[in-house]
Length: 282
Image (cartoon, rainbow, N blue to C red):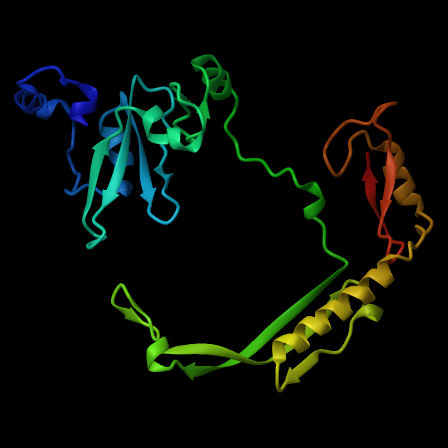
């Protein structure tokens, strides 16, 4: 942290300079080595400093945000990279990320300096574009409106299996872990679930040879049956007087919240399997 806040790269006596700055940071109550979960306490003790911590993922050779500071407007911001010993994962070490552009450049084909968002690590081509992005409200929003309604049909499946010992030459040893057994599927049970009782079926239960082939055949047959049911578009039943009143009085779409207008018309949404009126939408 001291090296990031008080750079002394061109000073041959930089170590002594860092030691002189040692007490410029308030670390009261922190336990060393400092865990990531203690960084909010460090930020509370040092109100002009914010910290982001990145972690390196060996599997993807990429970086993830381990901790993102909620204090976005502080005077001094420091990005740290948390490294761990491959032979001893509990042994970790922080290093100062001096050049974020160089760190994430492999994610693009650009050979020029990149301007990286501290929140999502997305690289931008200019500081102006990055600043315009940061001015927007960084909020995770749910936009898949069509996924928030109950499905008319779905399958619930469960498998049974038994443990089969691996042959000695098949056993693999990695990171001091040895594979001894493998799960072999012996059978399954499958339910068709529907909001309409007449389309529900008794459970399909199978136990015998080649259970996965039997399972795939059953699922494909279920798919054909369900497709046949939903292909018949049932007309909407007549609306009740209360539903008519709500429909006439409504000014916004129940689905997306948008206002109705001459171009954004008000329509009746209904269940095409049962004919039931659901709500009004744009």
